Image (cartoon, rainbow over all chains, first blue to last red; front, side, top):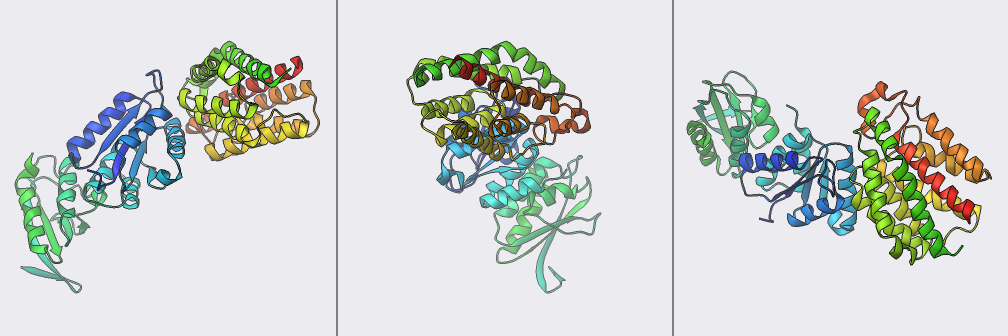
Length: 129
Length: 98
Length: 201
């Protein structure tokens, strides 16, 4: 499972994050590891640095982890989480500047084919409907 | 059967898109994933258009918007080109195992 | 006042200010953000207050770092990493509480640099930096405590005509004009609380 880039989805809403992950699993299949997290530490709308760190570690792959985020705070909190995971791991994690659902499907499709982290990021970011 | 495009030797195949919504997102993902399992370069186009796109690119396949009841043309070049063209045509014919 | 007492006092004073103005922050954020700034700040600083006794027994620098990490983990919005990074950077910049104006300015500057880096932002984008930087300038210019408070309040008001180019408010573009930035307001609340602590000293 870890010979491919993994995907982490971060949304303000746990339902959106889980729904997006479900959609990726249905469309792309189970050959890549995917984790989702959403909501603040009390379960309300928001994002939680500790939960993001846990999600990244849960699907950790030596090939890298591509993170898809929704709005502002999700990105800032993901950047913070990546930094707190330490410089060695941080080198292997990217945040994709792409819409969360579409970007996750694209990134996962690319990752399932065995592409490297940079290619996965590029494919997610090139998405235009 | 081969077709010369510049100096590349292509193996070609074609299959009808039978899903009424055309080559939509889920089939596009399946097609891309399958294409990526081959070493050969694989390209596709809808017979209704004259532009070949890289079948291994999720974005390109998604954007193709190949329509219902229109043949999807497949061409492959490289060591496993014949197997690639056949496998992709089969997938389209099976209506992407929907 | 010894450092452990002042640590505890700072935590109480900042916590009380945030608690008292949480609804106001939320109202400001409802106008140009997602309306959660008050709740987020309250949750974050309540978590810091819950660690009050442990923080009071640490050095000033260690307490700042620990409080910063708590904010990062608990706030739940972008302000968590922003304030959290500021506190952590300030904590890294000094072990002891500032004794001079120059040391206080250095401390604040370390926090400001962290906010700039974390938010990929600078002054003029209608953010907390539009309060923190003018406050730093007033300290460097030799302002007394009353002047620092005034500088913070004027800086908050000055965010009103600004066009937001960072954060959630940037989505609103021109419509962000005419509203006070909630992050600027929460920064001023913290500045006021620190001023209170200094006056008690």
